[in-house]
Length: 258
Image (tube, rainbow, N blue to C red; front, side, top):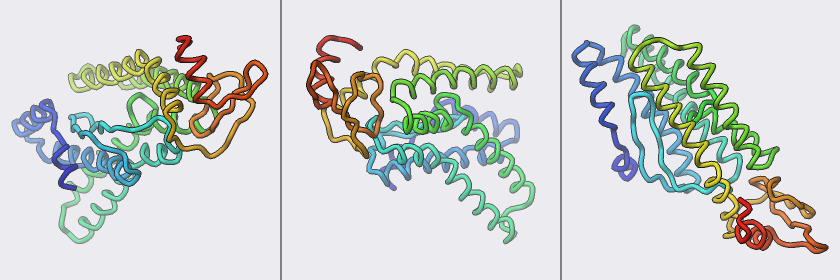
């Protein structure tokens, strides 16, 4: 826990928000929001640590938190689903804790009502499948169970674009904090799109290096673009079978088909 706290950083923009809240008399509101954001992010971190995934740093922004980790793409799908849901699960636990505080007269109704309002809004916001929110990560993990990683990634991007357009259209208000949020979400989507080839190359490279999790074998595949996260492949090519790492090494990276 001490190591995680040392790796947790508060972005300078968050300090500015706290300062402005002090001047405007909204320090309770900001404190509750930051508490929820921190607990939400610790929910993700809990599952990262549970699955022995290295957490490099955690950054708390005014609009949410971000965990930077060293994680393989070819991970157990159920783990990715649990990681994506970890923040919301911890928010539910935090809500139960606040109910105990309220019923024991440790906090007043106004504080409890404010917390409940912000907690629900943050949960609803995070389940929207906008990149990089939890909803988009859940979508990617869910589709990866049934589709190739390539197609799952593309679907995540398409759904993310549509969701972002609908979100901005529905919530467009001329306020600075909303504008900053839209810019952040738009930039995150842009990064995912331009990193498409890099992510796919990393996905295939992990298969070549090995040490990935598999729960089944597909023995007669002919197209690497259909590869799924949790399946091991034997490719049928030119009248013979090849292990996936041999096929990818010879006919994907060597020929530069990516």
